[in-house]
Length: 185
Image (cartoon, rainbow, N blue to C red):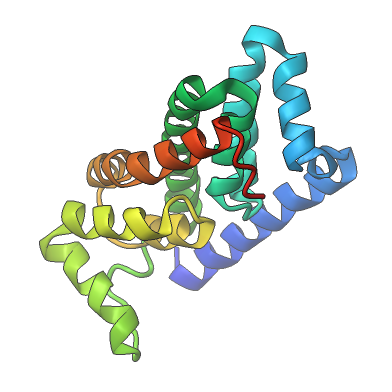
């Protein structure tokens, strides 16, 4: 299948997810207070609600730090950190699989004319884990980063190793700050 066809299919899928979210009212509850209330209402199952919401939220282009802050606010510094790191890793894995399956790897051989954008992609080939760790330390679980990496030539294994290492420090810090009462949203 041609790369542009796969990209159109990916765009249609994402638009469909957003449309379903809007029609069902799911996106209306994607606020800090709405997510926190859903987690508390679900009791022990709230963690699974949180993970599912994080996954769908990433597909809807909601930055991961929003969910990380909510987990710290809802579960406190320690359990919020654990919940946010686990949910973030599940979420970026789900994004990778969906985007790679539908969109393929059109960026694997693409050359970008802007050197500051091409340089990080060049290092994905020779030092994939290290490059993605650096990307994740600064850009965390931001949907465009998830999609770009999924459409590049990186392996799922390297992607997940880098995600786990690169997202953990900033997400633990954000969860702890939120859990201690520093509402940064």
